[in-house]
Image 1 (cartoon, helix red, strand yellow):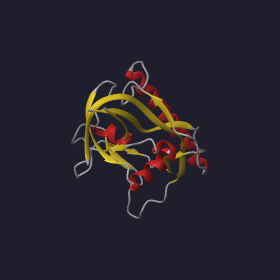
Image 2: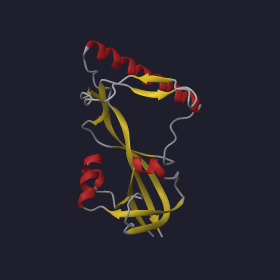
Image 3: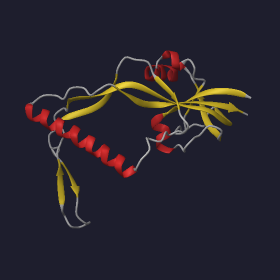
Length: 196
């Protein structure tokens, strides 16, 4: 039996990857870590962690994978990078573009629309210097805390509303909101697979 350390991208697995748990039997589509993959992976998680990766799982490619590995999952880890939310001024809209989106709020055919204000800022995550944070996890994707899903959703909505209110206040003053706090942001997973 051979143990392989594989990288699973957060976006790709979140799109259409099923839950994984240690001890589970799986078959994964794997590409070798060639120069191109080594480059983007080192940029995402650093050269030291990239050196531990034997292959990259990808299942959105048109061509068949060079390897189809079947085995038992030994350990699963999340990989996060320190990052912060950064706001920058949104470039002006092109001539003829509507300044606010319209969204139907009534029943179909009612013609009742609401304007959604155009944010003056573009928001993105900026990775800050620091080491990747690797944590063993019992499941991919990880469960995000215990508790009532509706309560978690309400908390996220309240955080979003507070951030929007702060952005609007800065827009009214003509200033750009300061960067957010540095927090770990999930970028992917390391999976150790005992290949048959």
